[in-house]
Image (cartoon, rainbow, N blue to C red):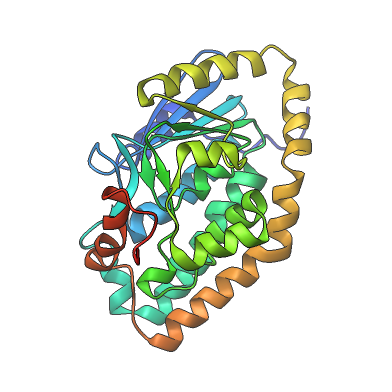
Length: 286
């Protein structure tokens, strides 16, 4: 017997409770895990706190060997269309500190943990319209609600679009389409996203989870080692893009924040840029 024991791995019952204010978690006996992000039970409202919780959750899920497939989604009829009204008070009070802690460090961990630390197949469900859709677009497979709209609002709130969404758009859309989407805030419908290769399937919202479980059942039909090693193969393009561009993109965005010496995530800023999505317009200057 070894002189040392293994350090205990995370226990599902414990981290489900620890993360309950940010994520609802359900796990089947075979290890298929459903994680639904929420704010007070409804759609995600962006904040410093839930931004950090995402990376913490992904690393914890990845460290639990009992997890076999991750289904990741939001809650309600929207994915993320607003911010917590007080969700960036910390950043506004000490921009220099939180530009690193919240945006640069936590942001990089969020994206890199999904790709590097969760070594099981992932299925992202875009349950409705929203920004910061990279967290489901960069899953191995992505399903979208048929009435969902994808868009990036960074440029239109005076921020550099370089905190992970640029990786997702450039990898999936190509150079020209990504440039248009990032500079104009283009509203991309679920059908366009399917046609352009951003998502794999488009379904009514109430069928997303059922379909994800069907796909998970197929994935689970092969041995554990095969599942995990296949994930490493299909994820190689994301790994390469992260190594090449993620840190630099975040650094550029954070330089912009520090140079302006102000935060731009306020609820009013974001609300004004999502109006055109709710109004069915392509962008906010039509």
